[in-house]
Image (cartoon, rainbow, N blue to C red):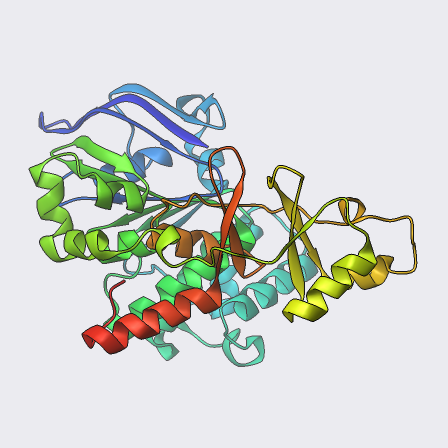
Amino acid sequence: MIKLENIQKRFDDGHEALKNVNLTCEEGEITVLIGPSGCGKTTTLKLMNRLVDHTNGSIYINKKEISEVSPVELRRGIGYVIQHVGLFPHMNISKNVAVVPNLLKWDKNKIDERVEELLNMVGLDPEIYRSRYPSELSGGQQQRIGVIRALAAEPPIILMDEPFSALDPISREQLQDELIDLQKNIQKTIVFVTHDMDEALKIADKIVLMKDGEVVQQGSPEEILRNPANEFVENFIGEKRLQRVQDIPNVEEIMNKKPVSISQQENMIKALEIMEKEKVDKLLVIDKNKYLKGYITIYDILNNYQDKEKLVKDAYLSFDNHINPKTKLSEAISILHKSEIGYLPVCTGDQELSGLLTEEIIVEYLDNTHQASGNGVI
């Protein structure tokens, strides 16, 4: 976790770039700093790895004030990706990726394995690309190398300063998608600077909107869109984006209001009978008060079918997430995108089951909306 408390930055010429900045970048999340040119977002990023030192206030990484750590030691634990990649032109791709592991004196076999793993991670065949030089790669490929170089020594924190802004729209969108997918696996603390609101809304867990060296508003993309703090935020978001979010339905408007469920006190034979009757391969598990307990799959039932003593409560799995009926569909899609199950239970505040949202329901809704309006709404 990165925490900034009452940060001020005044340069030698007297310019006050940052004024009393307070923010927290949570572990395992993507925090996006956004705002107009000169708002202080890049300066804020550079403070985190001491490319620039703050004038007043405190910056903590994992509860340790970074001024107590040497810049060299600090930077070796932080990946850094910049707009113009910064690959060394005289080094092949393998050596570029391995810069920090070599500085850390990793074993050669370990480095070679890590380079191969990272190239595969971003879809670049090691046999083809490890020996090539940066000039032999496209802009998008170079940027992929920039990203995996920052990941090479497995740092817990990655700082990214407008890394995709110089790319064409198609490459940029592909890399945004790859970053989202990559983050599901690596779960790093990422601080990402951009001036593009669409990019921020797409990739961020938290958006920090800045103006004139100050934080104007911070929150999830949904919170920013639903409750802009002032006219500046509204103007920066843009009328069309604000209108789109107003048109997005709540989950309760499209969810399955009668999902197939079973009491946790039932046995496996009963669970299998319900599955056969309803033609499903999963059941939601509830207690006698219709409070959600979890779910059980056909595989769980078959694995326990021979044990006549076992009840559903002995074999069900718990959900990582559930959502409220008033949750906006856009937020639900984001949660569902991170889920491995493919559906989300919908519960009231006291955990009473009220519905189910599935990928199929969302696709059907979007398809119907698209056909009715001639374009998508989200």
